[in-house]
Structure formats: structure tokens, C-alpha cells
Image 1 (cartoon, one colour):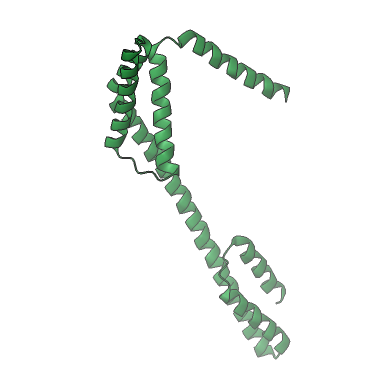
Image 2: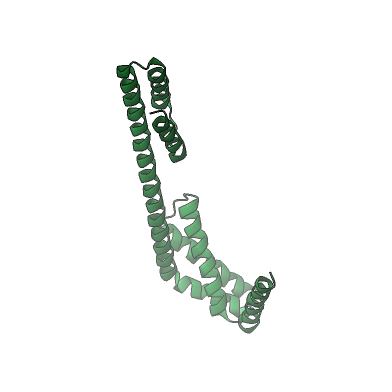
Length: 182
């Protein structure tokens, strides 16, 4: 725990030192504000399904830059004014960065959904195989004249076929039960 505390302390000391060295530089504030805008819009787009097109991103970034520049002019704060002007002039690059991040996150999300869908399909196939196996067991038991085993296997097969739960755990359990009755 001491190492973690030391790392966290060093991290915050580095942030404080960076802030002290750069708080009066417009490029520092432009970088921070631009990063927060890009990250915020990317998160809103990907995780909260907020539809933000490139024109809206440009409008937001340019609007924030204009507000900062305006506020800097009326308060005679040259750092704030320069920050706003820098953000406005870099709005195309910031919008492009946001779009790239959103595309990468969307692609990753689609890959995760595809993997989940494949796992669900695989689980459904295993459940179907368990139903076929149980019916086969019931038919074999009936052919051998074992009515108790046939009745039990038929009940299991019926239960499996009417079940809508296709999770891998359930499928594995049911498959184990049907093979242990054989």
C-alpha cells in the first residue's frame, strides 16, 4: 500500500509542478480545454449514444474558443484570450481527433458485440445438441424396453426444448445430466 500511496503522491506532485510552471501559458490551457472537449464528446458519442456530427463538433469547439477569447478580451486577460484564439484556430484538428477516437471506440464496441453474438450462437448450438441427445437417449431407452429411463429422458428433452435460457452454464449442466443418465 505504501508504494501505491507514493506513486499517487508523485503523480499529484507532478501535476502541481506542471500547473505552476504553465498556468500563465495559453498553449497549456488550450491543450487542457481541447483534450477535455475531445474526450467528453467521444465519451458522449460512444457510451451515451449522443449523435454528434463533424459540423456540431466544429461548432462546439469554435464556440468554446470564441467564448474564452471573448471573456479574455472583456476581462483583459491575455492568457485566456490567446487560449480561446488557439482553440478556434485548431478546431479542425480537434474535430478530426474526436472523430478518429469515436471511430476507434465504435469499432471496438462492434467487435465486442460480434464476439458476444458468436458466443450466444455457440451456446444455442450446444443447447440444441443437448436436446437432440436427450431425445436420442429417450428413444434408445424405449427401444430397450426401459420405460422409466425413456420417460425421464423424454421429460428432460421436453424441458430442454422449451427452455429459453441458452447460457453456457445451463447448457453444460444439462449436457452433463443427459450423459450421466445414459
